[in-house]
Image (cartoon, rainbow, N blue to C red; front, top):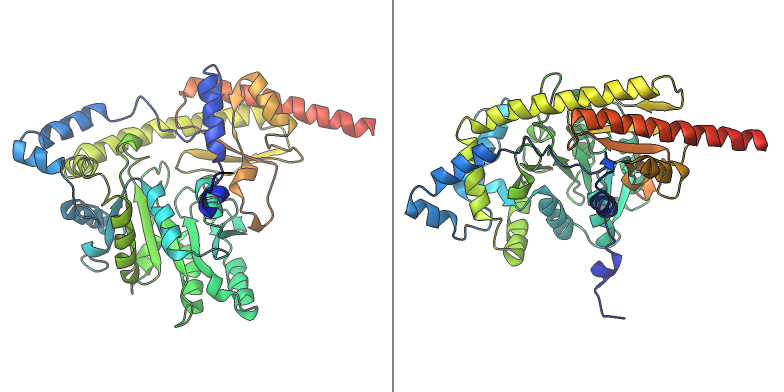
Length: 428
């Protein structure tokens, strides 16, 4: 056997990789699985204009094609920090530009945070369900993801408080290094952590932190810009006045272009140096040219204009998926889904049905011509119980017509699976 590292031996293929291969191998499938963005809405003309402006001067163009600093270009970081302050309703207070880091997408930042924070057998608390790509990364690092129960407002504060109290009583508190939350339109559940819940969560973590034990909150805000209903609310990061607890991560992959690979984060002061050191050893810093393209876009009117178009596009798709779910599945008492006001996903429950790859529904859905993400992949191995009757549906990449057709095919698969289950029960 090759002498692979423990990290390599523990890192397994992400479930979405298999689903993406299945979709690519069978283009006739209507994939409601992968969280791809809408192809037609990718900002071609805006990017062409930005690149043209960037290369209009030979000096500016060559500078953009050169290395940048490890933490990222200062002008880009200042622009993103300013935008965050405006979104959170804050003036000049808060973190400095020195606390902002640029990465090649937010996944890279999450992975690097895991590497600098976690030793084997350390613990990251998270929602159950949670972002399965990060769960897979934690598994590779031999850390443990522990799930906390949720409701429509986010993680239950009492469950978090009890978990931390229990860990302290059992002497395990030092192993709990972080609480990971997607605070806007969670992937996969679409839940947005409410303002009051954010305040409760921060108060609990702040209360449990002390000189010999520090728990960070990793706030994944990748979907914040994709709101289609209701008003925006301040980030959880804005509650951290001392800038010691919340790590704010974000990305332009969903709101502008995944191909540019531009992610960024705002760090507590004590994490700046270790993360900078680590990034310096990995890649000398995020791609500088992509940062400069984003800077051109953000500093013009192009980004906000693009966001408005994107929100209208996705709002129509969300409404199409919800309407189709009601039309084709609304009468089934076994089927329910959470309301979504943004993001790219619908989280659906099909009571009594095993939705995993080894269950009847998954194979029947593929036979019908539609693909979904089995919800079992979105649950940590520990903590709140894994649910095997959930599915994640994405409305990002398909047209409204194909979304409706995909939901119709899915409903046929669900009805046949439920009918078969009833026949088995009668036979017994």
